[in-house]
Length: 321
Image 1 (spheres, one colour):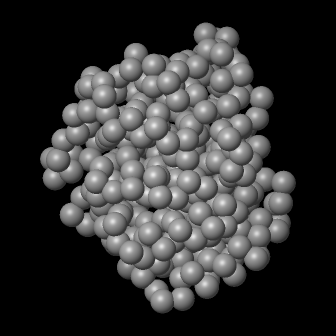
Image 2 (tube, helix red, strand yellow):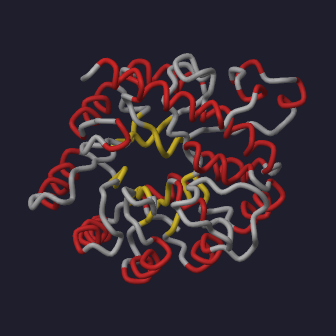
């Protein structure tokens, strides 16, 4: 890789992360203020969105991140197409799973634009993968190749994590027009929504992606997410990364009600690239610890908190209502 390009990519990613964090979010999980320690604590923590090699993180560093953030298990999602500057083979995830079977739940991903995609996914199913993700190619959501993969997940009784981004060079564009079609047509697959356009639709007012992918300010009630989550129990909301965290913190009063309305469909996920739960290699930012604090603050009921941190993800994984 070109060294200058690599350095610039690291700088841009780290600078972006710094924008979504505040000084109060830069402390390790163990170093919380006394008032934070009084908040409810999850019994188990399942991260529904983790990659191994963010910022060249090793398998061992990924496990260290999980240990430091109190994460018992994680869906580990490959990205064989290398989108978002993360290249992670499904075979690498399966290898990590065999090293840490009690910690890693392996997903698979392969380029759906290739003619052998369904055969490859079936092979990964036989090898022990439990779902597809992160589904992230430069295609419209209504592309027949996208539907074929969703249909296969329906056949296999699998979840699929989809990155929705309606920018000019985005991924699975057209969520507002086409997601409901799949939710109606395929009832066994669990579609786990993630990323900028998914979370922009927490509000009924969604700016053009050309203007911003990260809306701010109060949420206008009546958004597409509220409607789809209410109507389709096979849709789940992955709260990971800056996209999820920004959406959930832009209007915390609205978010508390959002959690109340959809207690069985919200999934804790981090998509965090740091190695130690304190942002060692990510400008002091850890997506996992900052989101944990937010959920502990907004979900005071310990049973519902356990659902958000663990049980909902297991239901999405196993297909149990």
